Length: 394
Image: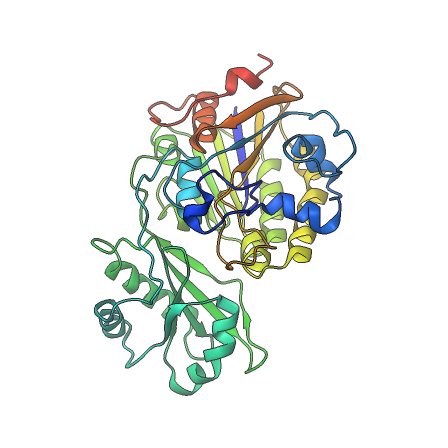
């Protein structure tokens, strides 16, 4: 039976889009600046898949021909965040920006949240780096028992709480209540639970983050797949991003190494019917992109690169493997610590895929979803242009 595997290297952008300046991202280039920082990148397996055809990992040397198809995709949605990036990959284009709160959330929202959460106060209520704000306010949080609320350049309402003050059950509960408050007319894209542990000066976020997203604004490939009998596995935070819609089985993972392991285990199993495995590997973004840590970002890429032979080695004859991203988060960018508006790579591999096919510049991430729809014979996806005939040996 046919199967598609989509692995999202969260935030792995490949250069600024023409409208980057509108997002305060002029000059951003996640992959390009990593190459500049380290002189070259030793990612032999990604290179064989075609990454050097997008940006040469070894400047001055001729890149090897790709063992599959390669190209890059532009985001059509009016945002640069995880939610719209993943939705667009699956055919749902969001043509309006989600609201952001550069001055913090209005009192009306905060008062409703305090009542729903059963707390007398909150800390923060401003845009901030997640690691910095728990260092700034963590000790006061331990004294008062008040949750730390903050946002970013994205449309997010983030709630940080020490696990000794808020159990995971309680933290997730107040996030659910916040999610109810932040639907129409506010339509904040995501509420995010950010549990942490430790002591003042040594606080550390745990891997128990949970995202509470708005449901997609239109039908996605995942919806259509499940309706038409295709099994959908969501690895990482996929289920959260799609508001638990259109996913047959959710496999929550934290660190990349766990997500990679889970993906390999899933691929090893012969699908019993048509299947889509949709994976998010978040460490690139959360641990290294936002923290502006190019060395950590490069190490995470090397970790994934080392795992690629095992991923490829377990592919079945009818498996279609797609590697891509949902936005950028340039770890060298100095203007801010948020996502960056960039093109994303698309690398396609499988026994039925022609070698060294240049897919060029795709007009929308939705081309990814449309191609999968054609391959798995899923009907009804509105957006995107399939490139299946361009890559198929059949």
